Amino acid sequence: MTESAGDGARLPDDCFALPPGVDWTPVDQALDRLRSSLRVVAGTETCPITEATGRILAEHVSARRANPPAANAAVDGYAFCWEGAARPLSLIEGRAAAGHPFAGRVRPGQAVRILTGAQIPDGADTVVLQEDCRIDAGTIDFPLPKKQGANVRPAGEDAQTGEKLFDAGHRIGAADLARLSSTGISEIRVRRALRVAVLSTGDELIAPGADGPGIPDANRPMLIALARAFGCEVVDLGIAQDDAGTVRARFDQAAREADAMITTGGASTGDEDHVSHLLNTEGTVTDWRIAVKPGRPLALGMWRGVPVFGLPGNPVAAFVCALIFVRPALALMAGAGWLAPQRFTIPAAFEKSKKPGRREYLRARLRDGRAEVFASEGSGRIGGLSWAEGLVDLPEAAAEIRPGDPVSYLPFSSFGL
Image (cartoon, rainbow, N blue to C red; front, side, top):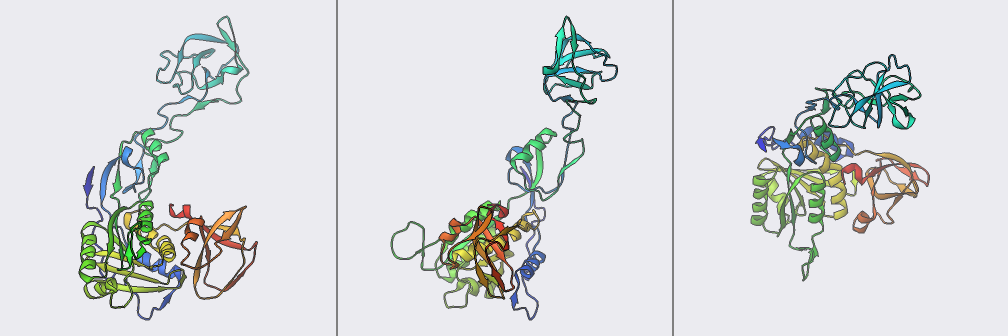
């Protein structure tokens, strides 16, 4: 691969600054503000299409050649010229097969054997299905197809030479590789994969599976998996103990090796909250008080030109905030544009009396065409994330929801999961 810096410049330190007087921020306003604060930072490189799955196009791609390059048969049968097709026709020797075109010319009143995928011979323009034909003593008879060009795939039916196939920002999937290959493309210009550092902090945390006292670190494995699902490369910064020097070293590593950082823990104002202390004294930090449940605080900071997403320490809140706020932010920085999740209006299979003030995301799943929600809204119930297949999104207004009422459902697949 050949690489260039592209748009890989750092973001300004004040990109997350809030206007004076901003207090509680509705979710949509927070998303709009986040969107306007960020820009593409991933550079570009040339990539063989065989290695392009999941990569983001840095420029639009157009077909180098038509697909199919020439008209070909859609069925096994016989090729003939529609005009002057007075039957029976004379069956001429030879055949057309895929990769082995017929060398001669089919004249009016003649037909030649042709196989699926074979190039239509000169002079022919229509193919009759072999099951409809009667062959006798060098002649062939059949019911005339309903139209000229029947059973023929025209040249360029799928793509014309020079036709735009994909826009910049498109994420390449497996099906796209077939389209690129069929139009003569072997390599494309893509964005370098965004590098995201993930850090957990706290003396109380231990690695999953470790013996002894402490709380297993649930956030970091989850956030690493989410970042990878979002198409990012991950720099695992591990667990940092509550020590300013240790946290600073991890932050500096992120600034050297990553384009963005996700942290959980240490973002409050206590004596051991070194994340917020370091960002306040040596970087920048803004606490976005977002009217969202679960969640609320989202600490957005900058360290040596690298944006820091400080998520709530509760795993359920961290998961939801990562989907709603971090995913579209990372997508924009990676060159894929701002990705809003696809949502569906689904009948509720639950009752809920919602208070006004906060946007709520309930762990949910679809059963029999209705949205069920997890039995508990407690953000300590991590098992509800595994139970769920998506989120029910309830607006800020007060609501009385009864079974059958329409609700907005966001499947996890809408977030690339």
